Length: 174
Ligand code: NI
Image (cartoon, helix red, strand yellow):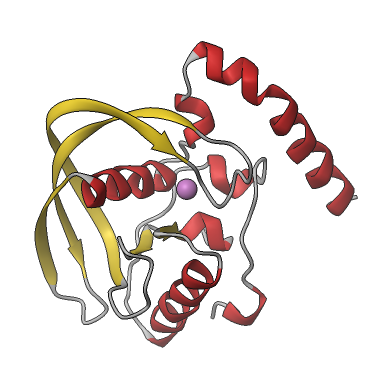
């Protein structure tokens, strides 16, 4: 059983953020509790998406709310994404990489298939900002962070902040 009470936002370079997350095998009460907790964490930290590894949980689940409200938050379990359209660069940040922003190229559209908390499969066509969120969150489930996708120049610019995050992580995990 997951102890969702202990979930807090994991930050770079926490190992869970760099791993390929495992499929959710069974959608039970612990998954429902996790989803509720993840929605609360996302809204509290003014995010528009949060993936399982960001809650310290190595599972293929994310929550998203393009306007950042709890009312519009939705849960995506075992998502499969098919991007389409053209690549568009736009500024992105990540709750696991505080202070780091950069232009990231994403497809303008995507089709996402996932399971909801009722276990039923659904699909959504997304365009623009929601499509960007889905691609960002699905990247998390494969262990990819925005820091990995920054341009060479932006990577150099983010070096100090990444170093500070590494130092903080070492301090907290001594
Ligand atoms: Ni993120």
